[in-house]
Image (cartoon, rainbow, N blue to C red):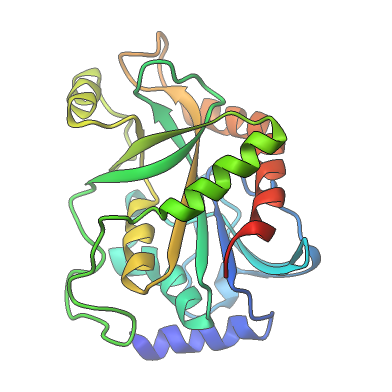
Length: 269
């Protein structure tokens, strides 16, 4: 595993040596163009499987943004696509070996908490893992991190403070919430959403948590921004669809892109 990760990191190093990475989720792949951008499809990077989910490009770009060299991952891998936990977090681990110090994750989510509406941007402050697996299961990769990594502050408080400051300066409302990850690909039932709300979840989705666990294991700082693309089952008054998720994501792309462009140069790396 470590040899494959080192090979991927060495390949990506030919594109540059970014210290910040951004992972763009469903329908959000076009929100962050870079200056002097060099791109490569997942398929050309050893160990990177290609995403199959609609709205996920499967492309890595390295370029500059506000004087900062940045890696942007357009699209991600999900457990429901049939990939193993190790495959899902392979890119994040490769970025850690590349020298990335901060990863900004984005995703699409269903809103559970009262007051959330489609189009809201929410900083994730904590998560609940209902995927049924942990990507650190099995032999520990000691070169990356400890056997039992702490997850008390998985979503970095300092980075969240900076994000709030930037959002206020731009006039963008940015809430905070707890994200619960399910296996998918079916959407949740109304009974499950009631249970998730009782557990303290504000948002629900099918990604991000494995990547965050792997990033924190490797000592990479994490910020995560969720775009609420629909109200969760039992809250929404109509059937849920992936088309709705992609449509709302596209509508909010400009605002999220504006936030990321102002935020990235402020991140401490």
